[in-house]
Image (cartoon, rainbow, N blue to C red; front, side, top):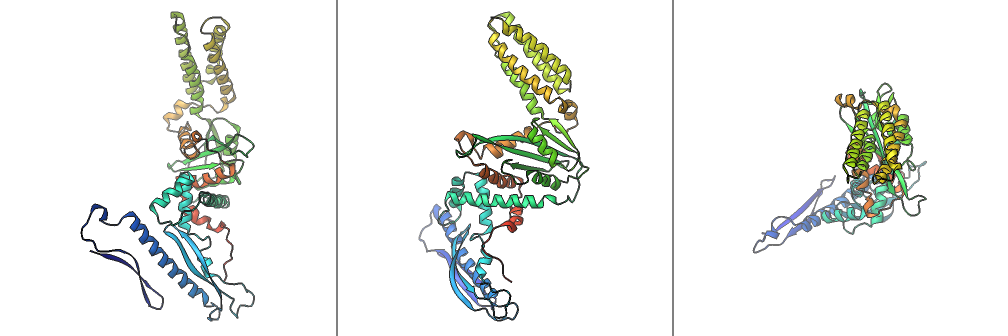
Length: 459
């Protein structure tokens, strides 16, 4: 059996054009490798179909635009050039005629290039969006290789081209976020939880520091809808305005209470405070508070157990640390600080001796002092975590911590010693967060108005 795939194109005048886009010669005997289409045959079919289809569409649009909309006469042909279009199904070269202005056009005498109107970026929006999405989810070289494996891209684009397209989409998404931040919510929500956490990324060698900070925010309303927001504060354009747009998109109003969970640092707290349109309530994240206690507990596990008295002292110390954790969990801040002072006095006495536990005691004392400073400084935003937990209200940014791990560290893998420029990391994260939120296709379509094109549409 032999087969052929034919493409039939019917023009506006009813003329039918038939093109053969692929086929296979007759075979005498079948093998498992010859059943159905192979990957290469499918790629060749799509590439051939794309060539004929794009050329026919460009010719049809040029024919339509050549006729003047005012007087109905045809515009004179100035010249013909070729223009390439990069798509997910290959690169297509089309004829691009240019027309001089019609004689009836007195005020507007610009040359008309119809093909440039429908191919402004020399690539399809779907190609640009797909390349940007893959470039934000995978390293640029791996994203390019993966796309070329399954799609007839033709000659693959360079890694730098993939990076530039990703950053270009990120720039448009940020401009769209800044411009659309003032829209009012269609449906108001009752409450919003805003978790802010940060991470650090290794900076490129030309940057003035070894690392730079990235802020990640996870916002959720009472209906369970979640949105992830990320930015590099040093590179963000109107960061507060963008975050406020996220809150408004989830239904925040001037009367909606916003619960801000953070580790107590001034930067995240001030950002959440400034972006919230309504009243705010700050909560110290239980995850960070519990980890501070856990550091002391881990140090206490290194207490020597050579003698019976040492084992008893280590057991009493571990019990006191758990009691500190319990009092903080139940909002007994003053009692927790008193217990820390008592424990410090006992540990300092042991550290001053020449006994074997002295080294472990000094380490525990140092961590206890850090814990005391942290609890004293954040005492005004420590809450009754036990009661809040029973009410099923947010008390921790643990989910945000996992988001930081997935969104930041997996892409900017610190284990492979990757280095980033702050601007490149910021724009790439704009695309990555939009892909995570599932709104990349819609956001990219809206952000088309901020694309920089070398032409202006002609009437």
